[in-house]
Image (cartoon, rainbow, N blue to C red):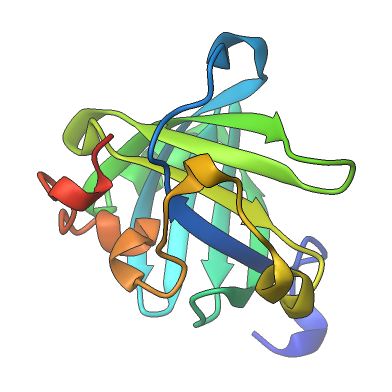
Length: 168
């Protein structure tokens, strides 16, 4: 696909990931989405995702903290067709959206199914400089941004199942 034909929903995703030491109180007060996703390929990353009643195909370029992301809408039927072709485990999780300040939101993922007990907190940034300057809240715990084992594409291979460092 040439650069001129890329989907219009392409954007640079710059995020940092943490293993929370504890969860915030009263999670029920925050909005959330139920997510199911599978990977058709992990190099390059090609993902299908069902978020509530919305479906997407996503392609991501290489990169641990920053990468280009292209998103294409799918129909429910197309998602179900591609779901059968996903490699590894299907990832299911609830993603909470917790305001951090006027500009940043914490995306707190609580995994289910094969990854039950895994939790990850992510924050997306407008620039690499902002990401590098970020001082996380105390409850965030270990920074795993540069540890590929904590990227969902790797987790879909089952590498974190029963991994003690990622369970809360």
